[in-house]
Image 1 (tube, rainbow, N blue to C red):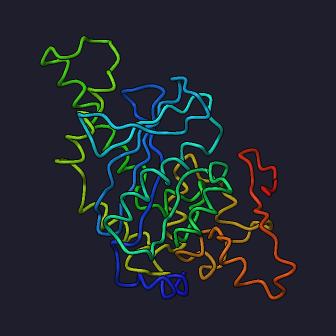
Image 2 (cartoon, rainbow, N blue to C red):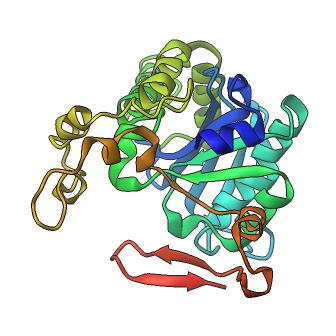
Image 3 (cartoon, rainbow, N blue to C red):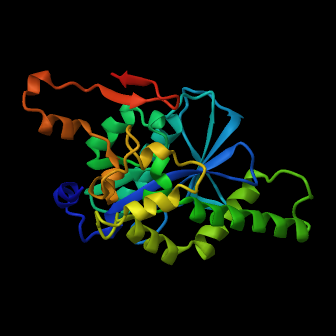
Length: 289
């Protein structure tokens, strides 16, 4: 990663280092949000995805609501896997990034690899955005927007929902409207975003400042108390502990090769392929052409 940071000239540019992850919204079943921020701790407005509201799949567009004009809302039912992430990148991330930041950007993606489509990778390459995939099994160790931070955001939304019920603006047991959800998100992003906690989390993960020794074997072992950690990540096939040097920091990250990086690293250009290998959730390997 040091070479990537140097090439993109972001070693001292926290505003050019972003992470994104998807958070299910507890108080709005069937909805999730892509949460994005940079290493300064500054968030982009959320990109909210409604998974149960039908939309014409040929019309891959998101809309804004007056209650939170900087956020975008997208109906994903009937669309393909990866469409929401692509629309987020094209219509939301790139619009915000282009207006606020330089062209040298690194984006750490905490969403399932199955959602990272070839056209997403192609567009990122065209826009000079380097993609880095954060493996799901170790995301609790290496993703700045960790489960604890996401839980606090969800708790704030739930607290706001309860206040609406107390104030008589929402009937008990009824579902939030989109307008009320947008209003709660706007208040949360404006007044309750955990800037200091996010910056501290970037440092603990070694993403910024870049620190390959941030994730130690002790942290990995301590993280095994979580139900989503598999023992195979701390022992090898023979049951022997992984060498600490191998387990350190950003070696846990699997960098997604953009088309540009593939061409640069290929010794024989005529033999380079644009095929991208992926692994499905059930462990089956497949290739996107």
